[in-house]
Length: 199
Ligand code: GTP
Ligand code: MG
Image 1 (cartoon, helix red, strand yellow):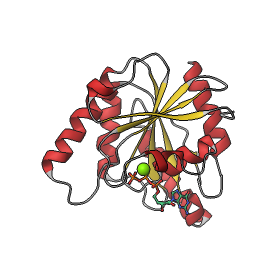
Image 2 (tube, rainbow, N blue to C red):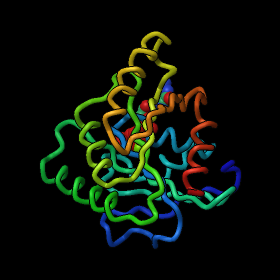
Image 3 (cartoon, rainbow, N blue to C red):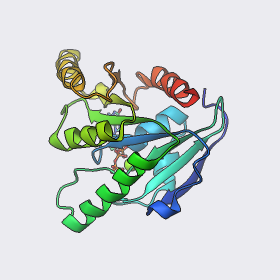
């Protein structure tokens, strides 16, 4: 799976720069530093396609990557949210762009909400999940960096997140436990995304 070409397609700072909506898209949402780019790299088996193609720093764009096989899919690396000290104007601009994209995008097949397994859900994640519930596009919750914590801690956090997920109408009840570093949970998530794209 995903063994063919993977290309950086484009970076959209505003809605008018989005690519033509002709291929199923899967958006990666999550706080800054949660591991979005690392997960994208692990899923596509590229060491640094996400990082390499993206402007460093606090990117405010939607970055599109295209997979050719076994089915055409576009992975969308969203700007990270919840960074400290971002000016209100920047946060407002981000919210407008992300909300319009999530609500209006016909080809959006699925969303991923990445949550750091060490920290569990934060209020900014809950806000994001509410936005996704309203957009009525199903989302998978992915716990990241599971290699960094003990199994007992992971079990507790996973239980808490799963319980909250059940209160969100658009959230999948099953969590994905992953480590981009160790490759844990990556194959299963990749297979799920292919199924999502095939609809
Ligand atoms: P922004 O683009 O700033 O929003 O961050 P991001 O969500 O793309 O996070 P990124 O993938 O850049 O990862 C942030 C840091 O976490 C990096 O130092 C990664 O090496 C580290 N990291 C990501 N995934 C894992 C993981 O599974 N295990 C471990 N140990 N570290 C990870
Ligand atoms: Mg990133």
